[in-house]
Image (cartoon, rainbow, N blue to C red):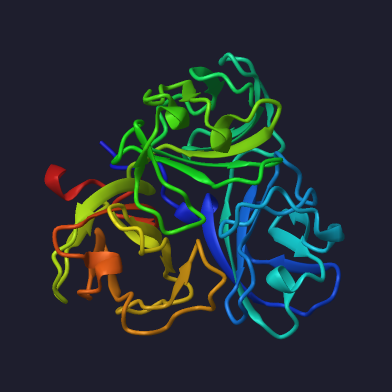
Length: 349
């Protein structure tokens, strides 16, 4: 039996590095597919993280992971279009600073999406069930216990949600902390309990439930949710406990990671660290960006991790990543599966 049905992770997730030119119509190629969700950060400058998706529309404007701001059109100077092998950016320095190094993380869903009426709130959903990723747009009703269809066919392990028309925090659901709590992607706060977030109800194979908190369910407010379901050999959403020493904890994923987003959940002073194997292709990997901060890329020794064939291992005692006895959550995507559909698992040989 095959371990995973995804032999080429790069068909669904890819990190693209590029240099901005400051000019409108700068076409970025080499992603390997037409992305439906693109997250961009200027590595050299203290600019806001910018996210775009195909359901809201490529040129509709950015949502900023380090800010509470509502969707910002930026006068049309951000992302211009999603293309067959990448995307086009205009003149905004955050996505096209002249001569500056930038990174774009890209995921594949299924285009502009279609109507989903499974929940008490109708939604528009762009879903890739193979990769376990959907983009969900909906309008809140302010009522606790409202449900929204996500289209995945399995329960999501992680949901990243933001009010499009709402000036408020991003809200994170992660299976490792459960539906009674949430985290804010745009700041460093520790996990917090609130019925108003996910109505204390875990997602199902067709729906996620929202409370009456304005972050996730403003009456008449437009919202977007990025839903991720775990797929063996391609994605993993889990938790680990730090060891507090430089020979840090090993986290099994079943694949060599290409991307890790990580947060210590019991701390109000540690942020959302992003490490990938494109900006930092050799072990020990140390090039970090913070989803909650405008800070330029950190290449210090603090975020030290080895990307291994079947997981990742921290090589630091830093409390952000490997605090002794402290809980941490993560999302990870694969560079390559441990074995694929054309290989036989070692245990079966």
